[in-house]
Image (cartoon, rainbow, N blue to C red; front, side, top):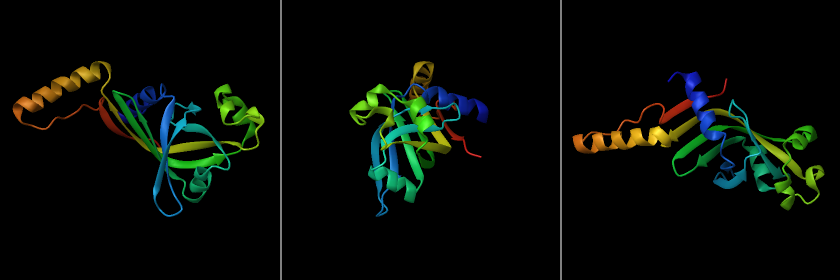
Length: 165
């Protein structure tokens, strides 16, 4: 696969995820991960998440914008690494608003504490064991097992993808 095909494959995997784990750096240098609902994922893998402006993750991101976002299902796995920022753009919030968020923002999309986190990814990686890729992986695993050699997944199964400029 060429880099363009890898980017497209990564997006095809990511676009169906509704949740992800967002990991940010804490003030004491540790890492903190939490589940986040995906508000939007663009074809270039830019991701948007809604959060409360008073949340610790907001100050973590403002102090250390480098984040890791992970996605996982039973047969598809992906990560994005990049820079996050807190966006207070009311037009963006209005466009991305989901009624499901009302449980966290009772005042709705006009809640002054509702902000968006955007992640501009620099790189990503995927592991795709779904569909025919899963079948290929079974055969590759069997080949490796019986020959005593290490398995070598194909680029459609696993690839590191450069996303940023």
